[in-house]
Length: 100
Ligand SMILES: [Zn+2]
Image 1 (cartoon, rainbow, N blue to C red):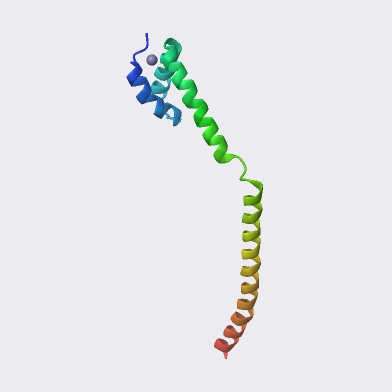
Image 2 (image 1 turned 135 degrees about the vertical axis):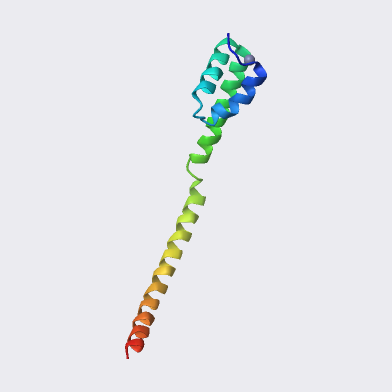
C-alpha cells in the first residue's frame, strides 16, 4: 500500500515533475500511480503537458523571427566593429599624445 493519499500525491507531484532529488518522494509518487489509476491519469496528463510546454520553449523560433534576430545581431556586430576600428585609431592617437 502506498503511504500517500491522493491529496498528498498531488502535492508531491509538483516536486516530482520538478525533478526533485528526493528519492523517497519520487518512490512514493511512483508507488502511488501504480496503485491509483486516477492519479496515474493526472500524472500522465501533467507530464505530457509539461513536455509539450518545454518542447515549445526549446523548439526553434519561427523562421522570420529568427532571421530578423540574426539580421539585428549581424548589423549590431558590424556597427560595433566599425566603432571599434574608429576607436582604435583614436586610441592610438591618444596614446601617442600621452607619451609625448
Ligand atoms: Zn491517488
